[in-house]
Image (tube, rainbow, N blue to C red):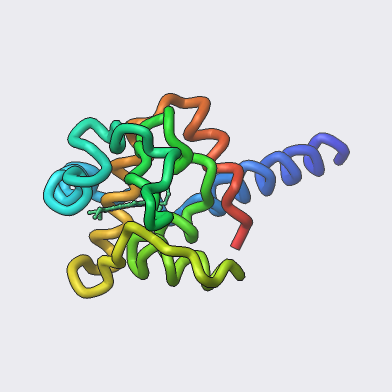
Length: 144
Ligand code: HEC
């Protein structure tokens, strides 16, 4: 009896972890890679390396594009933030999280990419991270 309860608890714990991160699962990563090269690489770098001095804003307060590899902070953010940032651009994405007046260097892709295409680009970016960064990022996604 006790053992059964433990198995049920373990099952739900595993299920929740998998379910929390479902947006990036099963995406077309080769398509995401092509879309990344076509739409993101000119700013974020062919090898996801970002622009030089990406932590220093220019005289207008606009930041250079950060890397999307493990040296950047993309993996510090949950899936929904990454999606909204890509779809709506930096200004709107931060407004939605309660930070108005941010001057963003990134426009949204709502008119260029479908939601499925955006998730595939993000799944490609995620697929390039080492296991440790993937696990940390995955844990940021609330169960829903
Ligand atoms: C015109 C240059 C430009 C292009 C093209 C661009 N970005 Fe960005 N991106 C930026 C800049 C600059 C930032 C830094 C914060 C800001 O200014 O909004 C940023 C930040 C981000 C962030 C949030 C911060 C982070 O580290 O994760 C995400 C996610 C992102 N970009 C994804 C993408 C994706 C995906 C594409 C392609 C579909 C893309 N970007 C195309 C300039 C660009």
